[in-house]
Length: 409
Image (tube, rainbow, N blue to C red; front, side, top):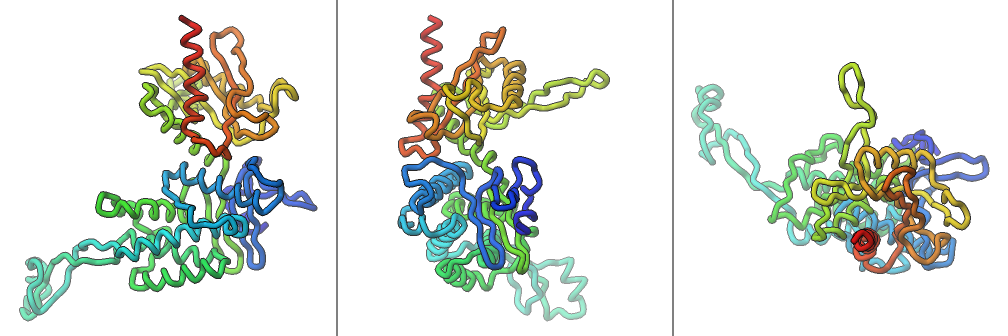
């Protein structure tokens, strides 16, 4: 509990980390791993997969889907083919991510550690590079045997390698797997001559990914995942435990947003994530906007918003059980504000699919907004779906538009 309480996600009401229910702990809004000195707690999302509930196979399948979501949300190529079913079932999410990182980094350094020319200054007996005249005539005016030189030297002690070393060091404190710790020790030896820099002082902005080092892009993304990514928080302390946690609302939102953007590429529809930014109110005294809106996904046709999608990592009920489907009234008010501000004819609250909604993902409820020619839908997407997710997302959005267009003809 102490490690969980130090997380930046702690104390956020329904999006906190753990709730003490006296005889049990309840995770709220986050997934990941919390480790203390003598135990670890893995928090996995509720995803319906084809496996016996509560089995090691189910946990393995959920870990696969969660890693897939992280890869999509962070735009990473994470190869998981080398991991056996046994590894997915027995290792925690943290150890799986560490193993993937170690394998990728080991392959990269075998091809050669990155180097670049760095500007150097030194006082030498022979000229190297160019002579620094101001320094020569101030520092060495009485000792002409020394030359103030400026030159470029090819070095491995660069920002990207320092980030890799910091990540290896950080993961060495987090891992409990003997195999992973061995991999990390080998990598630490490779980076022994690289400067040790605290995480807060790492030069992230100094790293430039171009065609010469593009193979390191995914490793940089994974380093951000462990050290500074916005979807998670990590905390460490001597003897106090560590945590690697992901906020599922944000992860689901980015995962869906990127899928929608890719699925609608080339359709004539423009997808903008976290856009809009219109204000609900305007202060009369100074005209300043207040209560800014930020819909998760806006779909444009030309200059017009034709569809607003807001994602919610919550379980909804089938309509036969509850006409309101368990949808929060606050979420409905939010969508009503979007309907007014963005003039969109179609609005969708998108939830994760589960077996209780039936076999098919897609539209679960369709409602006319009172007094307006606008439709508010509830819909679900199956994050455990094995078929092409881009095709499924495209069909969910485009098929309804085709149907509406043909009806109006």
